[in-house]
Image (cartoon, one colour):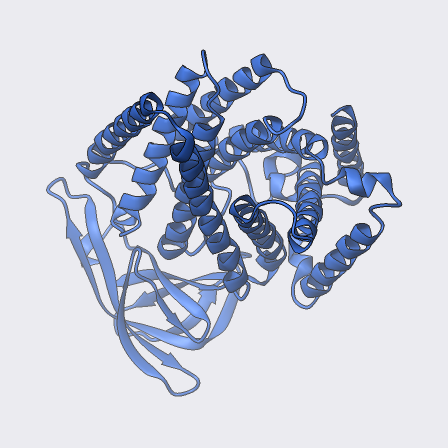
Length: 457
């Protein structure tokens, strides 16, 4: 374990030296085809490390828990810094962690460990060793995360997000880029009508734009876009972004966001693999426990499940009775919130009963639901705002919580461990979960900058 912390610390020092010498990471430089070449080179590097694992001790050691756990501890620490500081596009050092070399190197190292670990488990499967009931969820979870990390990171330079302001009866083909420059698009959009429904207090309940789309290929399409219901054409997704707030329902303009993300299918493939892995992990744990459980244990499992379901429904119902802003009016709302709250309740139960018994299987199941809730949120965010993960403060703390429980799970796999330390890790993870759940609303990093902080009645 000491080696792991030394290597992680060395990466942070190296990152600080790079930050001082060459400045922050410039992700825009990795646009196609450079990102494709980098990804190919990364796979070649991993392949070489695999074939040299028996000759180079470090390469074989990277597939151990002693390598993974310290690296994830550093990742949590750096991500917490990101979660409490206000991140800025033009910020430097800790105020723009996505371009901060220590942050990038630690997550890159995690990806290397992931790649080597996946290969090691695949070799065991091909040799007929291990158990498919455990190996399949393992591969799906790890390979899905590896695929999502690599393609989302290197594909970000190819993602285009632009805004278009359309007026009634005035076709528009110019957009404003993120660099605040004007760009002409291969499609033109004309606003036909803007409509809005409001609550009794005047706040918007729903707003939508009836638009006509003209393309260079001769397509002429009339459609409606609204929050959570974008329209896709020629590789672009059109999102309802805003309107003239002073005019309200009488607005004569609409603000649309157009997003092109060519790497999205690969990222989604990783998401769906993780969803399948989480579901299979839950079924495997439940099958194993129910198969060997006594009648008394089955009674306790049923009791915990009922309690968690009751509290999850109670909190979900309290959310559902509020005046929901348009972004929350989505088919994803119910599964995302309910699954997350159910996971929170199970993890709360795990902390309580961990005083007198081991709760590893309960944490595994809870973690699986935590993963499913997080991925549901990512898929929902893509439909609502055009991005599946933007390191919004809420998303940042969700990642912190997720990795913290992942550290606990890996630590419990060590042949030699201390139960008292594992217990305090469980408590620390639950404290981080509280920050993700409601503490985020009081952090300066989330005020006026988080899309997850809503005004509801």
